[in-house]
Image (cartoon, rainbow, N blue to C red):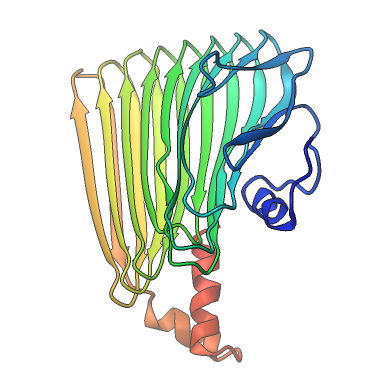
Length: 308
């Protein structure tokens, strides 16, 4: 792997938990260039012919292996769009770790738009972790616009952990999923905005097969003058079950808009949505302050616990 500087290594640790070269397959990208790539006997990573991204092919029956594909930007003014396609074979069981970190100390905006498509085979299981992080004291914005497209074949499962809790000025996250019979999608989103930041999360999940299910849960905190919009839609086209939940804490002059949507096109579709937006309860603050914490420290403890 090519040498990375201290800032890039810090970003890599924040978004992928990496202190060194990971075991297994990986593709690490820094400032719009590949700085390290490795395939394994069961996982092949190849660059697209037009140079716009990579293809990741995971063999049928692959178990207990991982793929790391983090991206870091540490130069002001960079803007890139990357297309990554994942082909997961039948009966595989793998971990995929993605994410992007941007450090911007300049005056120009830096932006990464990652488009990920997943084609998951029958009875396969995928755990997908995507973290976003921003740092740097420049006036240029840190912008991330991820698109995730998921196609789940019969009996397959995808568990998604989507995290963004610091430093991203603007983000538009779009997640689209289609599920066949007995397929399962689980999403856990954690989001915090502050300052003048804005975040838009869109989920559209279509349950096409009997026995398919989706459980999409978002927890968020909007601080200062930040704005969030959460747009969740589940379509039930078969004998399926769908659940969405958005639970948000609003602070200072923050704004939050939750837009739930359920569409049942089958008499056997069972769809549920839950939503709650509110401030931190006063009794929670008082209880922690009686233990010796300041009000600010008590707020941080409550927020950290809420976003776990």
